Length: 358
Image (cartoon, rainbow, N blue to C red; front, side):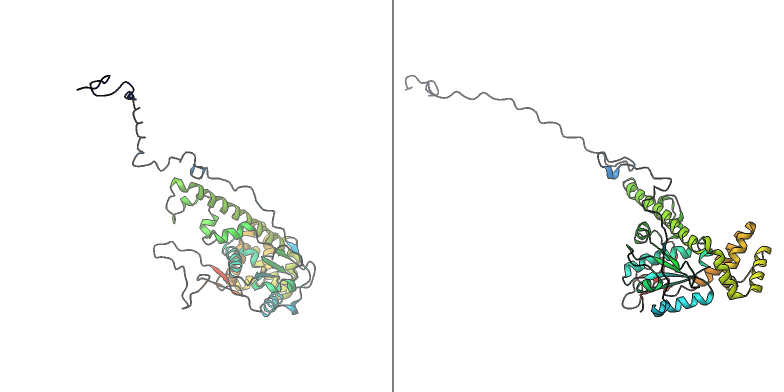
């Protein structure tokens, strides 16, 4: 029997009503899948590191002040180390100034200076100027005795010391920061890459770079351009200090060594285009340079003689206090790290400055 007031299902008048169904919106369509392959030349939107960047065709603005030589005090040869005294005496007997590259104790600083000096020695444009000086690596502790004035912000890269006892006594040459970075990044190890103004992708020893590497590639090009500009300033400062207004002084010292008669013979050989043995040209380098300046049509010939003379003295055998070839640090068994693989292109031998010896 059904209860009074109850429905068929037994629900009373106070029972709650059934909830009304709510329509559920359809789920959004899933995003489109990216293609299986990406265009390597397509930039990544919103990521500045991978946006295509134009490569600079010209060197960027110079980020450093010009390399200006610092005048020096009178040298004190008696206070030099043994290596410094020997280098000073060799230059004095040859009637040439001494280009003393200061060798710090730390291997990293020596490696930086060795990279720059090695680049100077490997460049044929620098050799005619280097024929007029004696080059040696001496301990950095000799800086004061060589005449470097106190109070400099940084240790000079090298000092040009006059050995004739006359004024000016010499100049100190600084090492630009961009050259130190170039040595650290290996930009000076390969002269072809350092001298080439194009980007690295045109070099046969490197594979083409993909688009995501364009920004890094641009930084390499900029760094190399800045290093070339700094290197040119350093070479110009060295030539101004060695030649500049000092060429008559160099000639007088050279004539005193070789005798006036032989000096006149060397000048005549340059005017007539007669070749000289490298060791002979090295002996009278200043006379040959002056003869080339006096006859503009013979300047290139004189430079070739001087380059051969400097190459024999500085490339066939390393400057005192340095050595050619090998890697910076040997292993305990005497082998050298970094031996190139057979399929790698050859690179120029490195110059290494030896640890300073008091």
